[in-house]
Length: 106
Image (tube, rainbow, N blue to C red; front, top):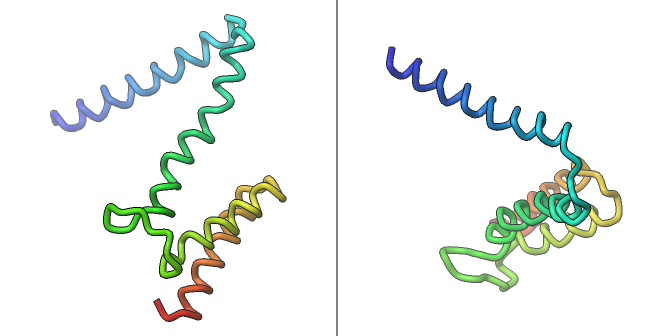
């Protein structure tokens, strides 16, 4: 029963934390500088997640031709810049990676 209480409290705290931002931002006008800075948060977070996956292998930077994730990621970046579509970006990157793996047998 204590796990259920723990999950319920964690869920409630998560809900209240998110609700507080929604309620606060709905009533308070955000300064323009803060609004511009907040628009940069998603790309910064995604970069911090994706770039290590593209560049690091076994804890080391791998820019060699054997790193198939790098060209697939570059293609996905080009698709993202051209189309601005999340679905097209993911589809192009994954298709490129799978095709490279299939063709090069890795």
